[in-house]
Length: 199
Image (cartoon, rainbow, N blue to C red; front, side):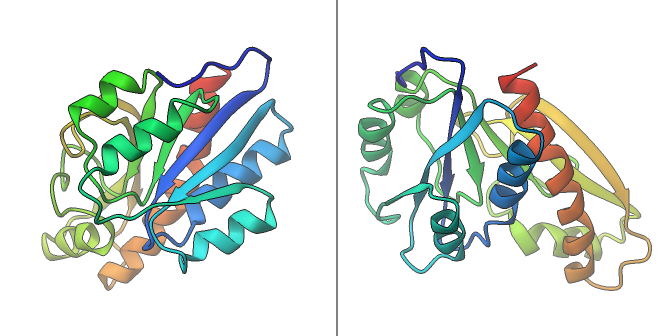
């Protein structure tokens, strides 16, 4: 299991992919720093050396751990590293790989994710990023939003932690929906992290 932290500082590690712009990471990091909480983001695991999140992490002196997203033993690789570092919470930010049962057995800390829809609507395999917003747009939905949830072995099926909706009637494209929902993500993801770590 993840090594526990003995002091008052709560430790976060982030799992992400090369597709991530890093906006949710920045929103969480900035919120923590703004209100001066005893929380730190110590590690970011990322699958692409050219991912935009890497420069953002370096600017903030956060350690980057690169790993191969096509590696068949990706779960065992992550287990081997994460069980050796102090961590209180694992935060997914654009992480596209499925975590298997052995990961959840070995990593005995909460794992959370944010999804750009009002789950259980528009969730599941293949429903990520703009794919979600295209589906919402094509269905002519008037309301969308974002959902923070615990992660389990099935895509987007973990217990909901926080959910907030937004009016998208003004949106003329999936890209406009994405921008509107993104502002909701940047609001509720940091708040959910704080709630879980501090109460």
